[in-house]
Amino acid sequence: MEKLVINGGVALNGEVSISGAKNAVVAILPATILAQDVCIIENIPNISDVYYMTKILTQLGAEIRRIDKSTLEIDTSRVNSYIVSHDMTRHLRASYYFIGALLGRFRHAKVAMPGGCDLGVRPIDRHIKGFELLGSNVQIGANAIIEAQADKLEGNMIYFDETSVGATINIILAAVKAKGMTVIENAAKEPHIVDLANFLNSMGADIRGAGTDTIKIRGVEHMHGCNYSIIPDQIEAGTYMIAAAATDGNVLIKNVIPKHLESISAKLIECGVDVTENDDSVRVCSTGRPGKCTIKAMPYPGFPTDMQPQMTVLLSIAEGTSFVSEGIWSNRFRYVEQLTRMGASIKVEGQMAVVEGVEQLKGAPVKADDLRAGAAMVIAGLTAKGTTEIEEISHIDRGYEDIVEKLKALGADIRRVNVPEPDELSKVV
Image (tube, rainbow, N blue to C red; front, side, top):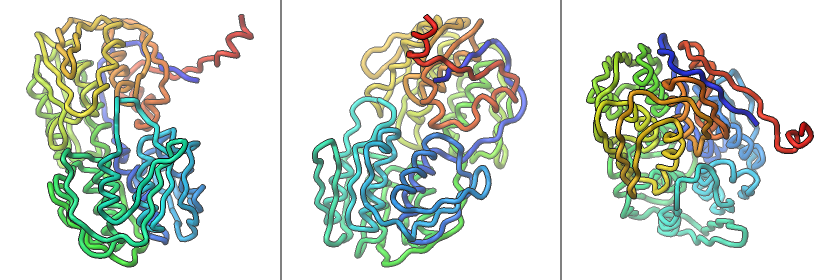
């Protein structure tokens, strides 16, 4: 077990380079199964979600070779199993993308219910509806095993009554080798969906309209390997942008796609923070307390739900009263309890938080309730007076590569320390 110890109050200054997108790579890695060939994928972030995804691929029969720190060669020609056990799926939510990929290749998938962050009820009914419309029979059996099986997959019209990123991705994975045309209406438009579609097209798929409400997929019989580079991580970039703003810093965030950051940049500018966009970087510069604003987490191109906790930290030290509403996950505000330990004044009413800005947060022992809540606690610790200790940081490692090293390079006083396991503590006592 480990924890982060942060001595706050230091302005971040310098440059930071953003890694490949977590939300893209966890979809693209299962998609390699469809190639039945060798794929070389670059700009892969070194995060725990990638570790478990590659473990699952290896268990299914893939051969994986690391070319360098951020590049993997993945040969899925010998994948010979369609079963993914709970031992692996419990570590991450995105493990359910193996259902679509295995169904697309074998017409059969048995995948245990996924784990990941607890953000409230996250049903997969839209995924199941889509698989069934493609001709698959889906059952949830003992031990929450999801089994999808089809004699053949055929294209169909699929309409989502609510936009779903996960269901959009899973149906794309299943449909690329289905017979005929599949049309997804009210599809999610996030950048990582576009990245997945571009990757699949590089392998010979025929996908059009990714990034719009309507995605058309014409099934193909065969796919092949390719070389591909993952897009930069929109959420990691936004996290460093807010960290710079919260600490009165001046940081150049490199290796980004500024268009993907527009909703984040707009809210920072509204708060009085100086944001300058370049071709593949943004500079964030802040002096003094930020101003208040209203945030509503929405599907892309709206403000990302994965940035809502980090932005709330900034608003907790802003001048005036801000309002934050969550339109995606029912349990996203769990982190507020941790922030109030640090002196924040936040009241949550259903899916709305009222944030009364205070002059400064104070260091305290807190925990990371989930991945993005953990990032929020890091930002809070960086801006707070005194020492903050963050436990349960395995959540943070799921989505942020080298976060301690990157923050240290910007001047932060942060370190990772070991925490004795409970049985070791009893021996000491």
